Image (cartoon, rainbow, N blue to C red):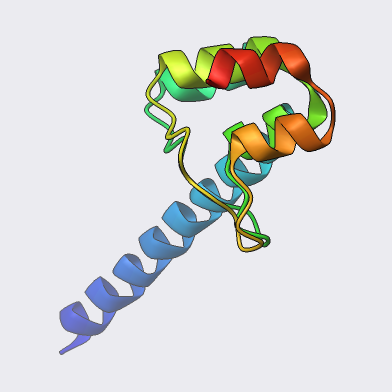
Length: 111
């Protein structure tokens, strides 16, 4: 019985560590996108980070980068299979956001 309880405690500890790691990576991911930090974006993608993860508003990294005008990040994400047709909770796609913010180069690239 004691072994069983100790195993449960250890499993719980490992689950908390994994959750914390996932949260840290998610925060790092969205901070890198918002800061236009292509080096961190590349590093996380090389570590198989899920590029389709969404923030609290349903925005993927591609949507954020398109809205902010970060062409290099948009290009890199698309080259790594980011879904250009995904939409956020408001129904906006990367193309729509690029057009709304007058980021013509990004809009042309996404077409």
